[in-house]
Image (tube, rainbow, N blue to C red; front, side, top):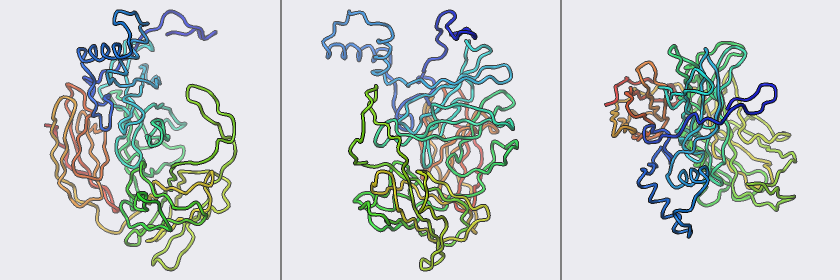
Length: 452
């Protein structure tokens, strides 16, 4: 609705602007990889009748429209449409919204466009706008788009963990932009890898990473671990799994063997929350989601060492006296350091818990050849889904790109396998697909094909 700019009070009536439609927009479907199909009208009517009967409520009983809409949304497996954000670019209004649901890897943001802030809004051709379903920490929904002082666009949104609570998540930020046709795009091809930026300068929104993932599936050892939470889980590129030490005694360590010496430029240390066993030290705030707010200062302390032979060690970073609680700490060495072994010794974590690491992620440069461009097939299995099968070229992993034209491959799915069903297509749209390969030495682009 319109607001009075002086009083901020409403002028006129509320007006609906957009509605979920997961029958024509595959990306709006819920479930991992958009696997949940919404109910048809007939199926939904039957589900509502069954629910009312089970609750002992007469079917002819009148409900407020909003309550009935909520019930139908819950029973109908419809997407949860939320997180509205508006930008105005070149005289047009870009209404962004989150779809599908926080707890899924495909949580993302779509966009509608109109000439007025009250519509008529039409879905952008380039949907979904923000979509990051693969890699270490997936998800890119409930976001906002902003502009920096140099005129670069950025999109910030929430990324999914959702292990102990469905809303457990973090915040990511990606380079965004407008193309020559006014389509809003977001580059998330290697969305949780390090990106190079020049302060105060106009950035190339499609610049690829200069440092590559070195740590995937590398050999791991540890001082101790709980059953089912071994050290190898800190190198599987999955934020939902982690190494957990068997004891909270200070000095627990995690070690990685990269297999050979690499030119290491960055390390990301991701601590995980797991079974935090503490008495509640204060009052529980009785809100819609009861919680205790801890305003004490906690510390995360550790020492990271490197080695070329596993025998003689040198300190990469010493945070044994840190006064901070950085649970996703990021270290950068622009000039690089020659390292084969890395050892993380953990001295203190919040609440004196057993330390957990979901990702000891190492980035840099290898000395070998980049992976070969892969052969692949991409077939549309129905209006909303496609199946991509890759012939393994020996790469560490692959990145599936797709879009409305060969020069607009705006969407991506990074994976460490060779087959993937992607359910984010829009009914009636034609697509082009490319598969790139990556390893410790670089990224190799594949050939672009029209989706069959």
